[in-house]
Image 1 (tube, one colour):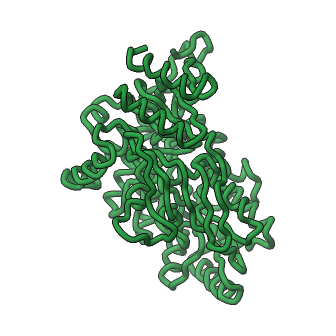
Image 2 (cartoon, helix red, strand yellow):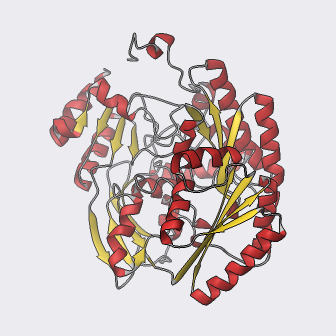
Image 3 (cartoon, helix red, strand yellow):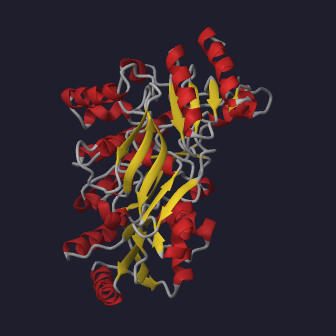
Length: 486
């Protein structure tokens, strides 16, 4: 163990105790990746602070010893944003899970970063309030991680992303200073430093407390599943609905491969031979909701829907969403490993882009399942592969990167809600000029002049892009259970 890490270990043991600092390799290996398991690095140390004072102590100790640090929430991120640094400290915030205050009168809640997304809505349900952003991993993903990645979810089409619902953040900067960004209202006076911080992927500091905006439960909710012969036909239905001025709460699409996996996992009643399924949900005043729902049904039929299933009640609606939100986990039924992308394209080019992705998959000899937020063109193509086959793993990583860059070529972006992380950092020059990246790096340096906070993420660097580790490949003896990776 390097001298700086050994000295830091002793200091952090005094601060956190044995229970708050993981030093054994088997314990540290638990944190070697986030939800993107294709990239794995075991951190030198794992700190588990329980309050903001301990976070400050860990950050200041890292600064004194010149050691990099990586913040981590629940580890459900899908871009390698919480990938550890081999010579650094991973700061896991999962023990900071207090609900600090519920202010129902002003429709606000303040929580620590380890509180889960779904827990927020449960905590305010008795006041007929809820928290709108709803990532598929909302049962386990943390608010701190949502802030870092600017997470969205199925209902972001109408209600926006995390940044539209964060009022204020308490943040520990990379030198250990504690600051408050934002205020009690969304449009606080002065520079929007809250907006700069949300979505910064842990590169500007560590969030230790968050104040969130809550919404009233809608009067009515209507949900349908429309089957189509192809994703292209379903994409035409999406465009027709948006062009008609209808703004659903959510519009989700699954292709046949995704339908097969989700139905086997959740038994939600999806049609197994459908080329694509479109889930459309509207909410709001009952009369308005019913009128718009009739228009959605008509437009789906006019654009080739082969069948339409309308949720009969709340339990039926919950089952439909259970099937959709199980999609990423359900892919394990089709393949032991996958890369998931998060590119955004104009809605009007959905069919064209999906057709090109199919062609690229055939050229690479791989399967790609598509499940995504069709309403705002946020694609989630899942490239299926077997990590035990190194050559296949290499092809999968290449195809995944090419799909992300394809979205940029269609006039879109590399990410809608999963972030850039380590996975797409080297693709950033396809979307931004050198001057763009230099300005972003200057903003980062204003918060973290020494570049120790979540290094090697978001921005392309010669070291990162010249020495990318590539997808993790177990040694044959490791796969056979003869050896363990150290």
